[in-house]
Image (cartoon, rainbow, N blue to C red; front, side, top):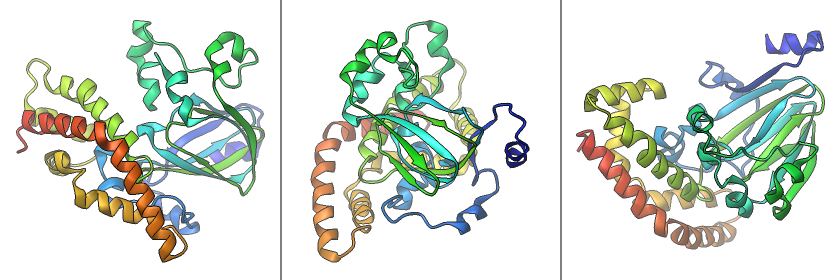
Length: 302
């Protein structure tokens, strides 16, 4: 239907945004392309984990949009990274340097983590992310003048890589069709764990403690929201405190390094990733384990 509307050229803006083609029973689409070896190098405990976004199923999307449509300034969900292949058309991008993430997202509530929370705007306590395509961008959002912005165009056949914590906006210069996969790996798992920890402490745990909420009822409700079985969710939550064990982290590093061209490059890549992960997980790992343990015990999943 989306393709027919684009081909018809009615002139009315149309945008099929982030259609999850695997969840939408069109997973066979993956038979028509090969994921570039630089991306999606992660073991199943990451790519299939529902608490971390279930990237293997729920973070693979198709976009079909007419000229002028696009995605307003945002952060990718779960603080994940993404690659986007443009099959047809032309896209315009504005991206901010990852180190300017805090500057641009301060005070924006759940939008800082890639989510749209209606309660944020209702309370009137949060700011909006800067509109990178606004003609008066710097007048409306003065703090953007201190950020490093990168502007460019993606042509048909090109792949654009968007790293974790990169605030960005995209619009279709003409009718466009694109495919994108978001993913977690050794380069961004610390960011994802930070987001998961925040979600457990600020959203999941408070929901589980609402008056009259029984553990089994809560797990059933949460499983339905996530589109998985209660048994699968219970198993995932019971194992959550040990998710960042040494064995898992080693498999995560090895998977990421496997994209290198030769054994020596793999070894060096693994060493760099191991050092970086050790530093980045120093604070978030204890906080994640604490939140996961509290949630597991609260739900009686020991």
